[in-house]
Image 1 (tube, one colour):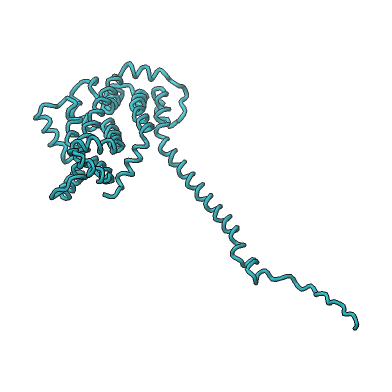
Image 2: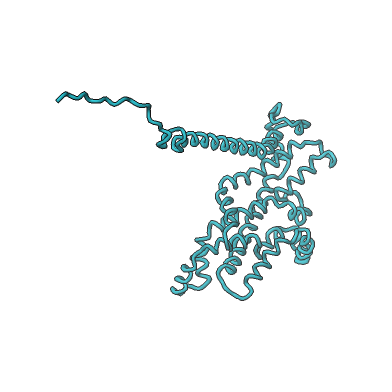
Length: 319
């Protein structure tokens, strides 16, 4: 037999990867491209958001920067719209502290704000606990009526409340600035009720089995668990009372400057240094007083910002 020569395979064209899902049309090969483009888009969006937030920070910080710069300027330079004083007059702070009873104003504001915060926190907490825990006929309409009081403008109730305090003989005292808080606040009642509704009722059933009454359940269970909401109300009301110019202007304006609160004292300083009232236009002293009065609130927010944020989140809880 003749020997057969093996036939060598002829190399053909390279396989078409596009027919096996490995070519350019394969979605798997396009994923890195999409991933890169998607990552770039996310980075661009994030950069735009960061830039917008930085711009908003400048918008909110500009008034404080202007106030700080104006407090170091001299007479006639306050409104030159410059954020850098030509000369730093540190003597402005010493002169304001000597001419104005800033210490009395701050002490008065701290005392009044503390009384207002404690009274409204305790009273609103008790009312909110009643609406959240107890089941009684008319509970829903009564709670709606409490919330409806928030719709009344302050101008509507201002004169009746003034006449009540006048008849009681409390004009010129601190009582009108915190006395109404003894009856609670609709907003804080709503805020604390939302928090109480999140507490499991099994805790109270177990406490009732152990013989605890409602008062003991409140102090031993509700109050410790709801301490964050209590602190939220304290911070909110302290800030609101500290900045309350209207009530101080109505009930404390008849006395001397030593009995003023911080906001009323700033209004007094505006009048004292205004040229229309016989002053020489030393508005830099007003800026110094305003800055010093603002510092306690900035410190309060710096240490309690977690509770401020939690208070905003608590309002959205389902009740």
